[in-house]
Amino acid sequence: MSRTNVPEVRAALDAVLNRLKVMHPDAAGRAARALDAVLAATRVSIWPEVAWRWSGLTNTGFPVEFSWSSLDSAVRWTAEAAGPESGESQRLDAALRALERLGIAADVPGWLTPSPDRTLRFGAWLGGRHDASGDRYKLYIDLAGIHELESLQADLLRRIPSRIVWRMAGVDPKAGVSELYGRLLRPKIWEIERLLAGCELDADPVLAMAGRLTGRAPDGLVLTGAAGISLAFGEGRVVAAGCFIQSGSRLGGDPSVARRVYRVAAEHGWSTKVYDAVLGQVTSSRPGRHGMIGFGVSAGGDPWLQVGLRP
Image (cartoon, rainbow, N blue to C red):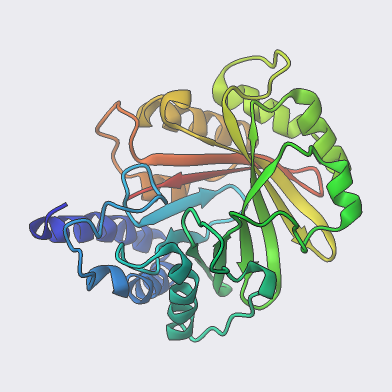
């Protein structure tokens, strides 16, 4: 993207925030100010021609992704805290500096700090969540090259599929590791059932959601291709878990994905007002603005759905 296109990029970002401000003026305003602080390095990048199209966070390289969750009506985003000229091993420090600009001091476990011999895929991202109760932030830290996860108890590791390759940790700046994200190739029904049973969670809502979103009945495989796996921790146990899939060719273009999301939301009685605001007007049938689609179950047995969208 050339330097002359930067105003258009900012306009796309502002358009989402302005639609969110109609619904949640205070929360969206705080989200806008936070993103200004986090994207400071991107705006002054020495590589302006690629600064807004290089990131692995989204399918087009845009360094910001918004998301909607069925769990609440918060304004959610994830973003790069460093420009494209920064190496992957420098991105955690950049995210920590961005948190400091937001008035947050983060405590990152030492085993997550990148070492010189680790080859990273993305380094670190920073996420924000804004609602009536305030602002919360999360560090997403690259787990590439880490083979022993100190945040998981040994007995839990023995109860989950060993084929999972852990890719990322979600770190609450105050509470420490709160989530783990992995990758599982062509997950089978029994593997998902074993994973969730090992975490003392109900697999049925996850399997049902997979079928509703993809439109295919389980035939031994939950999903074709690779799936992301997420585990959320709280009070010393797993409080939620689920799967993530990339939309694109698997779920069709934006109109197709939106129809699936609306259908599932209507069946569960979930409000889609935040999703409506982030999505805006769909103008293309090609895979584009939708990114990762997550679905899972909480410890209480309630299903959840989360959708990532770039501006």
